[in-house]
Length: 238
Image (cartoon, rainbow, N blue to C red; front, side):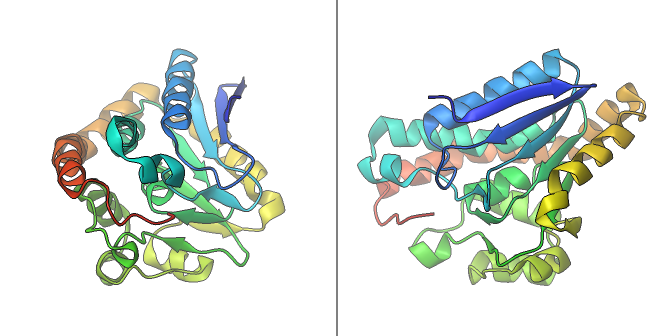
């Protein structure tokens, strides 16, 4: 069953992750996200990336992680490389965060050009240290890309859980809206961004992110080596 929905209207593609649960990023779900971005690029569309109900994504699929082996490493490879794909996407990308976002869900969200969060009793966290894992290099790069320095330190070394107001102050979100307004607000933003010169947008984005994208892509290899050496031991739900 497909867990990623794709639709396009008036030059705006909506990519919605919905596995009916916590939006775990399994290998299959990650491949569907890649395919959706490929479709959106072929459609020359701005993208709204969103989740379901009260969750954007809770991170990598625990069941796959617990089993370990080549499928788990494939999941990590796909996930760690995904921010670079989103960072270099040639049209505007808006992440509309429906609620909770953890670990890999956070790193994917932060790759967007603009991040809209919604008010509510939700938590945003990169909780690797709390579950016994050194922060992956890709993850640290994405957090540093968006967060204010003090919040970056707390997010990485203390695995701080941020409520939505603190998350906005830290830099996870550009703005906060009521849950009922989330999709409409994201669509209004995307509609406005369609007026941007597409060539100037693409070249400017890639110019200022060239070093970050290169860092992320190189870090994928190093993070996979670390994961293989650790044997994916000690992982808990993310």
